Image: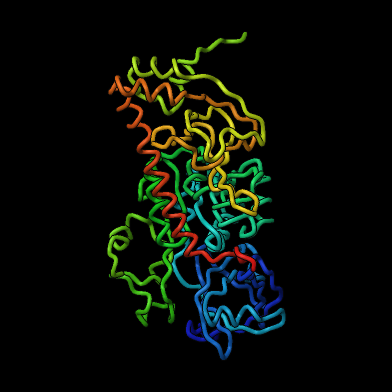
Length: 277
Length: 163
């Protein structure tokens, strides 16, 4: 008889490959020690554990149709993620998951899709974009709006080039500043949103960026005709147990680890207005 | 067959002139001309007299800030349908940045010095001009503030200052 996996017990994974995306951001390709596939849905996250150091919540950034390889993209911002940055291929880490509410896919089928993100926010969105492109005939126009500080800070540049090369996908990239002579777009992500040509009255928008900047994207989308019941966002909070028990990630009535991290904006909008949360 | 379209019609088709009263449109089109710039051309330069503003008909324009002892930095690009250059509205009427064509650019160039004079006597004209410029200025200011927030939140990939 199979014993159900305990969500609090980490499963051992070995780092098969490390990609240094940009300074301070790295991607791990992980293989489970028991060889079992790791199934997840786009938008879900894992608790990633470096033995003896600590555990952090990290969204899966790979393709859910390749369950043999678990992909995480991590930015070194704290003690745990800084320590993880020193790990090389061959190292063992612990994984608990997948956790959380995924991005909706089936319920938005048929719509034009616009993805709005900046810097590392592309990582949690990438599995969704992969899946939409796998099922390309199920959706209308696909537009990806991505912003970074500068041309040195572009994440997944090869992937963006591949998406941009497709005849059925538009990628609008913008940077905050550039050297003189740069021929691309310079400005905030909202300038990339405004450049999109889609059916705003029926589009579904997926926003993944810092919360301070999410509202700006939502307002711009609203000006263009995307109502808040067609905007999906992610929230970031201090998640520890990841199963809605410890309360660290609780915001008002919701636990981000199990009710989120993906929310429909109209359902989370009142929480955005409360500064204390 | 080539269709000849007058300047007033070209101006009327630009988002800047949306819902503009006909008499105002007619006055503004009297101060308007077509302009074409090639990639790399300067449209205006920081510190020069600001006597025009521009509506982009086609192309990409880069706003650049001159950095002493370094190459200029592009801080914003503007594209088809955008308007740029508001220094003509505010004393001392000097450009605060460079504007450069990133690609072949077709513009409507409006004579700000001419309009400033007309706005003194035609307050409807002045109202319509400011009514169109203020939301754009406010939006760009709000966007710039949020870009500052984003730059603070998002750490740079490379040190910006090298000692």
